[in-house]
Image (cartoon, rainbow, N blue to C red; front, side, top):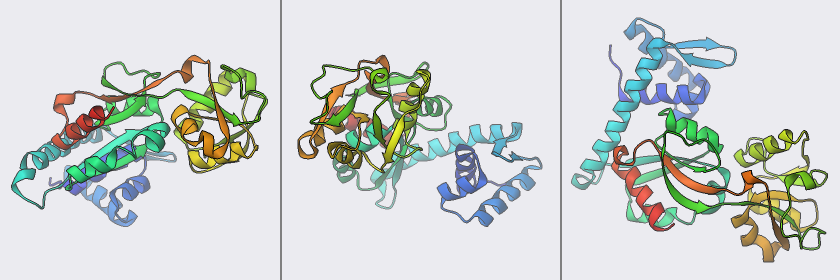
Length: 295
């Protein structure tokens, strides 16, 4: 039995993606090469590692054992890179940070340039997920660090405050609600909405809240980023649920007005979440320290 680091990283990626195709994409490998590597791993072990099904793949008992050890080995390699970084210019660290829509679009981009400049041999990969998915992934060992809303279940995780991040209803400056002190989502379900794409974590969360009220939101348009959403709101095409930070940043230029949402799920803050700060690889701990220093 011989597994190299590429095999281990690939197997973790396949599990995270839920498919061999998705694992190949995350590993930047051809699908044929990915399939061959997995077959070779199973042949070397003498047992199947994955159960193939119409909806993707699931690890077998042997696969779950391999996942456990693969994560430990890959985490230890990150620690090794961090400890050895001062001894050679060729070593590098890689930090994968799961983050929700607001963190990805508003809060993290201004903070990363200074970190990358101070750590030239470190790369940072941001992946957008819903806050509950982030918490579950970190809790389950699929990711080491996340930025999630404190409105979701964070039990069993270590958390550090990051940013206040309430959601607001962005309306055109001339809208009847522009002067309102606050509104509930239930009061505006009849409005035309502007939103992000279907696979956006923020949009999925807002859709869930609407369904709990027995309704679906009527989307006139979906756009790829928050600035475009706010621009269309300012032109009078509809209203949108967006992070307060985005609405305030674009309020004057795009002629929109942020109206606070009175619903409990909208009064949220962002936190950094992990299993154990002390157990994080060195570069990941440095990113946490950087984000906390600028919080």
